[in-house]
Length: 106
Image 1 (cartoon, rainbow, N blue to C red):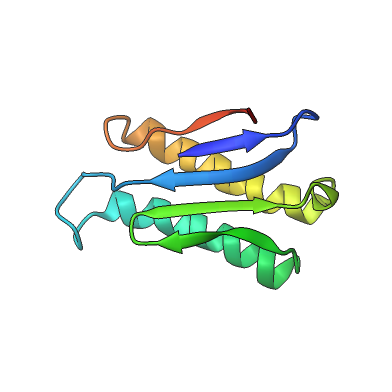
Image 2: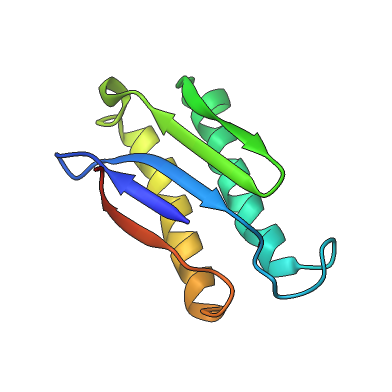
């Protein structure tokens, strides 16, 4: 999973692809946990913060990005930073199955 930041170091997008591979499909609690966190972030942005999210969610892949004008908002920062922290924590617990990268946008 990749959490991207803009030139002002504000979280700006998230991209996740693949499955954790901790267990068989449908039994993989590591994959389910990571997926639930990212889905919750999407819902938090759209339904709680009322931010338009560009992107798509399909089997094994999630991409989301929000407008630059929304990135200073405390609620937006809290939602996406919490998701990032949670994914990083899962990555520490299951380093062979979840990799979280953070960095600047290209």
